[in-house]
Length: 487
Image (cartoon, rainbow, N blue to C red):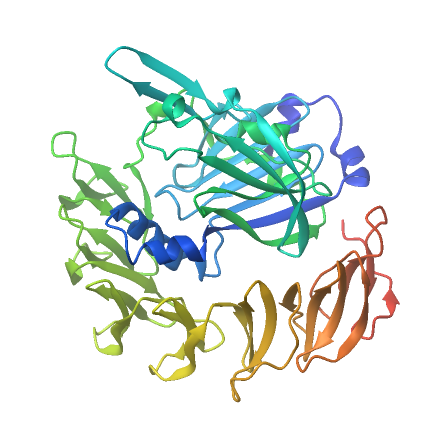
């Protein structure tokens, strides 16, 4: 059913790779430091406000903005939410052959495995062209921090702002926090990551970047590195029309060549909606978010009728709960499909709902709210990492704690890292660079003796006893179990 990249490019078989290579899956989210978020309250720079809004919109959602699958032979990177059109890059790192896939258009192009970020700086006297390839990488000794449960080292790219971009402040530096136990990872304009001895788990400057939120070791899946059979090869990406793309329901967005506005037509080329929108998103169920030329948000149905007029500063849909997130004067609220307000627009941000609750932000702090607008946990926490029906995991002064929702009190001491273990009362914990499992009230359930440990899935967790050991499996009692390999 699929056209394999290897069938086109490689002279060796997948079977050898299967038996030798692990596959790591890394989720990344947009990350802003607390200092940067504080600046948004005092600076007149609208770009920081935009980044803060993006972080609020993306950071607490369950969906990562970048997902990567990597081993010694292959790389797959998916970007979603950061750009309007989601993209997938798949790379054979042995041959350096790479392809960019465009799922919304069922098309793909050949591309470089990674390129350097190039900047053109024009002055009165000259034009200077520089790239990240010109920047030396400095590895910082005796500096480390934990990201997604893994200890990371620091590498730095230092910019000469006069040469690279005069708009940048002096002493600009790009920080790369990486873990050497993971294969190196590069894509897009991140060619400099080829020189990093491991996977970058944070890339950013000025407290703005992307950071790994979850890392899992999974079985090798060859389909991740294959081009779907129904995709069409495009020799030139610029031949693709990003506004002639499927929206669902046999409807397609198209762009007027004169006004550059967007309309909708069906698969017989009949115009359903005249070009009048600045953007049209894919349909979620029977509704789609649109914006008018003034970038006001609205919602249309599959007949092109505006069921919510384009008068809103922001809208987002949750079709499962049939609710709409909206913003008024920079504050977020929730209404139902009949436009009845469920939660007034009085919070800085409200995440999508999960397990009956949503995260909400107020005055730089985070809490929990339910769909009736009842405050389950007040917004007094620096960061809420995750939650279930009874407890939340918070970060406070770079330490992780479990907090009981009912009592609103911490139930554990501070740890280097905590993660709900998906199994009753258990929590994955990191202490003194060793993983173990504790209960939600802080008792040790399985001793801290592992180099790495995962949550439980169907009662089984994967662990490493040393950096060099193969993956082993344990049950909720810490007993070793055998897991049959799946084909």
